[in-house]
Length: 299
Image (cartoon, rainbow, N blue to C red; front, side, top):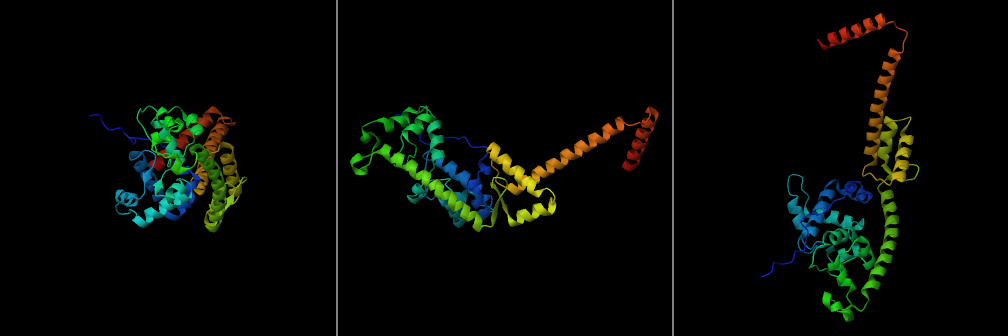
């Protein structure tokens, strides 16, 4: 008897800049860092189960709450709230979520690449989000590509007469809807950030700081707070890099600058001593005096 075909994944690649994704900002403001743990567990459930989606109706919320149980573990209401905000921030597909399915284009791209060498593989076209051109651009996954290249839709258990729409045209319409959703989401995010009293700052208005954050910067760096914000804004725009907490980044950069200035000052003092008009004998006596003072301070 042949072994059953594998469906999910044993492991999956993870982005190293995940926690710096700006989509997490509204979720983190409301629920804190628990949102990252819930997101990670969702990915684990997706990749381990079907590989490219998980059915939320199969006690997903309860499972996550159980996996995070402990002194500071969230209840099911918090887990549900985090998932809904992750969907609202487009980290998962809103259209699929309405049907009880949790998935995303990034998840499906990962699954497509990870299963490229599998011989027997099947996906549900009603859940699959990637178009044929998009899949071909990612690489050659014969198992999945063949599903969408075959003319006989019955082989993938889809009755074209019941669906009454060409699957490829449907994918193209989905791409257009996705563009419009992103535009609308950008407007909604700007409105939401405004309601949360978050100010858009910097040369390119891409640094997000609360009123309290700005007061902190003005109090600690009265002469340079605006320049520090503009430097961060210009660096992010030039490099495409994002940070999850802009205040923390500014403070860290300021501390690094202070350490650098101290080292340069120490180096300058040493060079000034070396280039002074002291005689060699005087320099020797000064060094001996310094050593004596250090020894006395140590005792």
